[in-house]
Length: 600
Image (cartoon, rainbow, N blue to C red):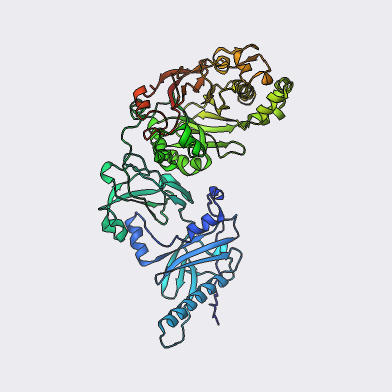
């Protein structure tokens, strides 16, 4: 029978605390599993604090108002104790559960050793706050306060309530020499900018598996680490300590696979010489890039027909992501518009990597697809104001703005059916300059219908996009200039580029007949913006075995933005070194467009 401690003096405890609400984005299982590992390794950079913790162990309590349970984690005699209790439960029951758990543990230990059975002495379990007993009828949510002291027999534990903690810590599966290694991290009750990172390399191949600290040599102290050729064959270890600017949480340690040799010179290395520094506040560096979705790169058709010249390992997701992250980080861009972004790539690879380089991103997936659009912006330069994404077919069918266009298309059921079959989306983000809040920018990103004979479909898609963008920049954010980027799947000789660069296309424009007579529906279209191509008309932005051409564009309104420089494209020799794209030296079948724009 458990004997409870009778507490005479009661204590009123503060209930209000400072909560980090972005914890809602994590699943309960993720959060609990993270916290159940919280007592396994303790570290704090302050020497005085370290000396304190040598005298008193740590009991970590996680208690948030939007969950009914709290967790209590501590170590006793080398055994990890993890408890999940109701927040509304009385403290006495939780303390009794701790005592009962210890008694059971001692009993099992004696049985396993087959020692003479002796009476198990019940440990005294109490909770103190400011030197006073905490009343056993206090609710758990009120009782377990930061700074309280838990007594378990002769052991004392300082209670830390909601210390900084990592809820996600992951390293990429493939590590290449010369390519940045970016951990995927998520934190609650802290901020990544206050965390401490230490990178280590093995002193010799496989020496880290011995588990001895002397087998690891310190290699770096930043969030991102780039291994060198001397690291090939060695594993890397990351020790990361969560923080909130005032205190540290529990350290996490992660180990990579052995570093592999990189591909050597890549197609983008020379381009990085033009983008080695972040631009000043008067300049905006923009990147538009179709990065080739993994769902398309891994098909048998891609491997045998589209890209038979590309080594199979170079089409692998992990390999290509190493190249993409290095390429994008080396551009030091302020705005990045990406197409063909796998949902998993955005969440698990690009977002964590670019976050480490001061960039935040938004993602728009295509309906019933596994890939979509992503737009990233530099946090130190821009503030995100609003999002105005649409699926083009849905806007056409339901938004009165497009009723006239819908009526005309409906005259040809075959054409209409083909338009509404497409899940093409338009991603629209409105950003505001932090340096000059009067400067705002509407950033549009899209990937239009791909078929070579779909020029008529693309014209209709662009007409829908332009009308939507006109409303955003005239009604919702009046006067905001437009930056329109993406893979338009249209060459400079197309009707679509004529519409954008010259402002209109007539009914007899040749692309209206691109789908054959059964889809013919001639329309006269006008563009509500005066736009110019910031990167001109390159010979190609897409180069595969059976085709090359300029399909990608960055369009700007000259009234607001002037082109300062267009970063030179890779040379033809660089592109064709391995026959075509993608290759071991280039991760996509497209080439990124990069330009610097200056506010007028």
